[in-house]
Length: 344
Image (cartoon, rainbow, N blue to C red; front, side, top):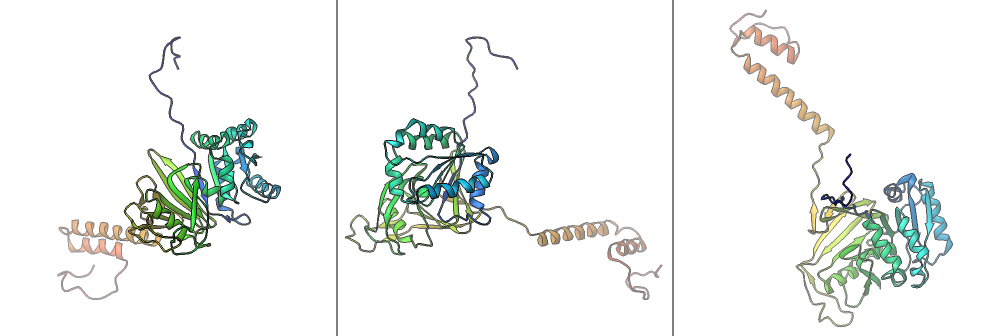
């Protein structure tokens, strides 16, 4: 490789750093059996070389939650688990804590009180370091509260219920890792359809994303598109209100809201959704083994038929021998009157 001359500048720009994936977990992820989601997180963070920054700020359990996830991630093969627990905005300015985020290959935010989490880290050097970590390729994951804070708009608190009603929830700012969206968790298990629908009714530019328990929305960057893939036992529900009609701007107190024309997407494990174009990615058709065997058999029959047709100008005895080879022995009987020839 030839080095450039001193003082010369290269016309080739270095390749852009790939953004790391987001793992948005709806809470109550499996920690005892297959641990599908947590396994995927550790593997994406580097496996046996993973350096995981653990943020338990949202939790009220203190050291207990740190011990649980520390043991889990180490058992799954992570090389290092580094607790980062700011308890105030002043703590979130601590350069030592920021330094831990800066060297992490994976960041995991636990469940708890998402309003506490956002009030302490959003808009601080620590929060900025989390956003920058994703830009340099680190995995950013969060469960429950740690899922909600990843969107640009975050459910602060509110009641459950299937009917969207005025004032049933409030919204705060999140980290903005997923732009123009609001994320809710424990979605089906706690019947949070109404409150997510209320938010998008008031802000139709937002995409509403509800994630079930033990379910993960994995968001990856593919060119200019942000792609969401579903992992886990449940489903991810998406409300697209771009063309909705609503009375949210005039509804009084806690009255039910008009929400017409909202596009609903219910995405089970394996489904893919383009967050940029707000469209479902159609899955590739899968052919079962049985169907594949039938196709192969049909292809063989067609090849045999083609050979039989090609042999039509030969003697009838040659054609019968070819048929016998492909179809097995024929029962003994007299000459076929259509042959016009005696059996050999």
